[in-house]
Image (tube, rainbow, N blue to C red; front, side, top):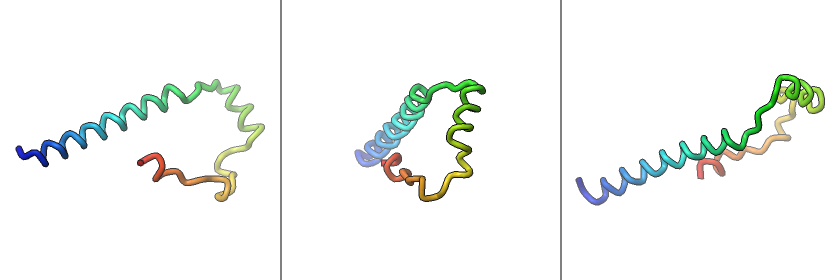
Amino acid sequence: MTDLELKEMIKKSVREVLREERLILHEILTPYVTKKELAEIRKKFGSPEKYREEDFVDMTDWVRG
């Protein structure tokens, strides 16, 4: 195995671990909501499918970083 191959394998492994850790962090930071709370939220803010396209910001590139 060459140094370059080893470096690429390590980079791939680190990316995979970071992706997994980011998902775990997302789960931890996402609050649990009961059905009653969700109904109250939908009553107050409406349903996401009814939001206007300009109300959203595409952060795909920021997340993939």
